[in-house]
Amino acid sequence: MKKEKSLKKRPKYIGSYIVMALVILFVFLPLYIMLNTSLQSESEANSSHFHWLPEEWSVLGYVSVFTKRLAGINIMRGFFNTLWIYLPGILVGLYSSSMAAFSYAKIKFKGKGVMFSILLSTIMLPNSMSTISLVLLYDSLGWMNTPYPLMIPPMFGGIGAVFFMRQFYLTIPEDLVNAAKIDGLGYFGVFNRIILPMSGSVLLAQFILSFIGSYNDYMGPLMYCQSSSMYTLQVALAMFAGPYAQNWPLRMAGAVVGMTPLIVLYICCQKFIRKGLSISASIKG
Amino acid sequence: MQNRTLFSKKKNGEMGKMNRRDAIVGFLMALAPFLGFLIFSLYPMGLSLVVSFFDLKSYDLSMMEFVGWKNYKFVFTNEWVRRSVRNTIEYCLSVPINITMALFLANLFMKPLKGVRFGVLIAYIPTVCSIVGVTLAFQWIFEANYGVVNTIIDALGGKKINFMGDSRYFMPAVLVISVWMKGTNILQLQAAMANVDQSLKEAAQIDGANGAQIFFKVVMPSISPTVFYVLVMWLVAALQEMTVMQLISNNGVGPDFKAMTITYYIYRMAITNNVTEGFGRASALSWVFAIAVMIISRILFKLSDKFVTYD
Image 1 (cartoon, helix red, strand yellow):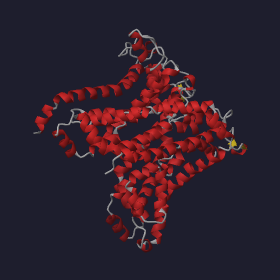
Image 2 (cartoon, chains in turn purple, red):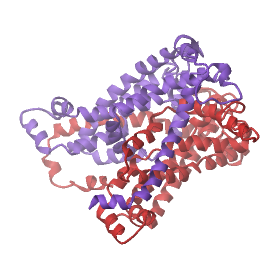
Image 3 (cartoon, chains in turn purple, green):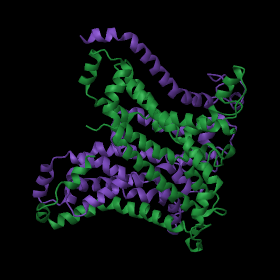
Image 4 (tube, chains in turn orange, cyan):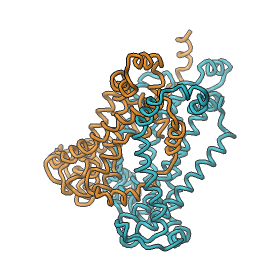
């Protein structure tokens, strides 16, 4: 029965296949052009003919990216800056978000509804109101040009993460929590000893989402962390623009190096990421 | 929507029975994100409201000088503000394009095609790409002399276009970047389409409906809440776009001021041109803008009752 159907529909699906191929091409093309140019010599890139494959292969762009100090910083240093500046905030924030999410999902306390609806309403709030004056706040705290503006605020936990994990904790049976409580654990103990160990996959999904966001963050470090020794990978990449304006192989090599970790991460755990994204996307947009 | 039940759930007798200590623990456990919101969102918002009535041309709050409504007068009469509003609206053209493309793709990937999983895998890559890298790539693609597009134009015998330096072509080029990055963000729409009642689709198919008819008469009505939600979220995000503009203009203003969207202008007034413009004007503009955005999204949600079907 099904086979017959698909046979009948075949002519229609040919069109769909063509469209799908075009879509894949549309996504691939800029990435391919980037990779292609990054492997060309500077003179070949800046010639009036476009070559779909490098005529003279050159890894000079990559060598410069990995060894030279560009815009005052080496790109590998930028990569490590990204890691050590953001990871503490992500990890601590993961703990505070999941703890709050558990509380919102399973514990009754006064003011819960109000607190939760306030958090809910902030999602639609345009953050342009606070980004600028955060500079003033950080400056008065003495945090400007230190990693703290990128490290401390995420430690309080993200609103998106709270919603995401609350969805998961709502599915945990009430009996499990109650049984643990009868055994003499407080809610804090229940969370740490029972709930946290069983939410590994959700925590990992949220961790990856936060990591993608932080890794790609650009305006934050640009505004709050302007000293070149603290440039994150993204800021370092953007800073090539000035001094190496016409060295396209170098700039493309930088872009490839900057984008590859996340693309590899995405392809390796795509199912996982997409599942996490589809839940949190409905929250964060 | 599902949260509504949460608030109305328990308001009566059970509260009294509950353990006081548990309630305190629960409150403390939930406190961190709320504190974060108070310190890093609400306080700066209040601060920026205060600053909007002052002149502040440094980062030092003690240098503030009260100027009354002057900054708001500036916002409503200044020529550059008006142009930044226009640029922002032009950039928002990306939203209908992106959502049409995302709907089209999501529908395409629902079909029982071979290799559809690979297609989805590839289509979603732009979403994890860093905006810095993507902008770099497109700056090269649209480069004035040797960029790919111009070498193709040249080979076809056309006249080269300076996309990044010509005010007529600047915004269309930016829109292409936006479509590449966001038009491929099909997750939510795909999830919604997967929940469409299959028997309805099959019934329509048996009745002889074609693909387009099924899409508009069966699929669209049942996913309209999601489509609408995505539309509003993307519009609010597009209204606030500045990263692409900052990057593609190399922290400049773009050809004929074209890169200047409202939020980018706010950023430039407060940070880049701190000495000449300062935080006062930037804060006034950001408050006026934020209120406008909130009004727009409120109106859209009100309007939604007319064409969104919730069942």
